[in-house]
Image (cartoon, rainbow, N blue to C red; front, side, top):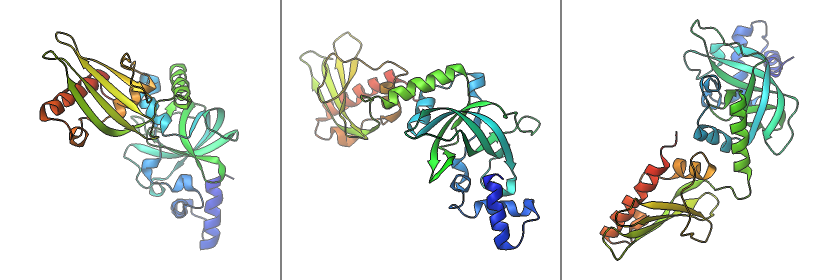
Length: 298
């Protein structure tokens, strides 16, 4: 008997019913303590991502999924049960909510071992005929968290937390996971501390330094240099020492991701409150050089 069926039987015995599955199935969502993975609201469920078939998800998309997931799992779907719409609150139009059972092939991220089989909820898009896609035996990559003291259950961390497997996606996921778990991994950016601009001796010459706030308090600073007739040059220093020779982070690296996806879109007024109006404006312009060079967090 599957966990949700077992729970249904318990509730049915208490209520004196149990012959009509269609009527009683909504009881699955009555008690979060009985099955937290099923009791979560719709935004915490997940849909099958088709990007693994049509193209590799961007570095930022995968990195976001990884940093938000205590568990990254390589698995193969062994069974799935469609949950009726009246028992699937918040289900988007054109999708079906499934109770999925999957065989664990590898734990890519996670500090504790998983059982060989896990279960979870997934909201999947229906095909053009309104039918379920053929997902049984499909290999998937899951971004999830554990469910209390239930080792066989996981909860996907968001709408985009299940992907169809591909060799390219697998390599990207494992590579970014290694970056995230490295001892010298750049921390998450939470805001801007302060910034200042020092004009040079020549017109158009100057240097701006921007000090970045991080989740773990580790220092990050940006240095932007301007020279007459030259393109502005900037770099990032990770640590207490400001490196005048530091360069900009390479695209599709964790340092790039932390900055591109974490820096605010403009320099806060409080960051340059101690500067003269001209120096404050120069610092703002130099900060925009950094954002343009980093590009969007896609």
